[in-house]
Image (cartoon, rainbow, N blue to C red):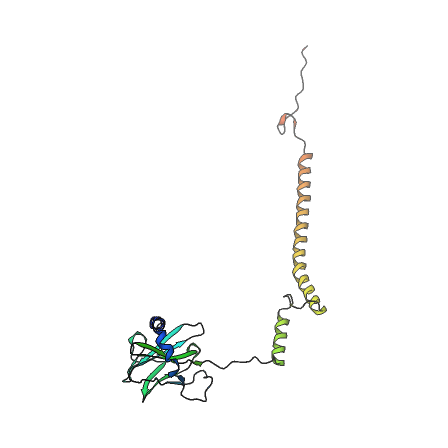
Length: 235
């Protein structure tokens, strides 16, 4: 629903509040069914407004939980409706005039339709507004957890045995945590041991190869296969 008409209504309320307060209780917005207290989701909701002068049109607005006003429809004295963006019809709301009362119908009441409903009439350049009609879902109460829910919760705990418990101290949980640590650290320690053995073997082989190279004697004069030089004597 458009909010620009709601802002205009707020400005009008501020300008005309002096004249409106005198006639505040002469208009009433209520459920068409007086026995209704809380509408149900998907229900057809009907509201009724009877101004003290039915020769003027009436506008329906809704105030949500955050206090914002939402324009719904304007109903003329000839029962012509104008919805937001100058639309003549709406898929969610209906408006009509029957006798001296103006009616609003919420075709399919949903969560976004919750709020307090008001009807407003502009009479002799004075803005009069009705008392509000709250329309909210009934309050729901949370039931106590059943045994089925308790068993479901325990199954989730069994699946996540490696997760730390929110209530430590039990022996079974400590044992499960110990098993988890063993499963994690045992393979890691094995891999580290294998790497250490491989490193030691590599060092030993390198040292043996170096010793073999050092034991080899080089031929004289630095040439392989050369005979040693024998000094000659001169007679």
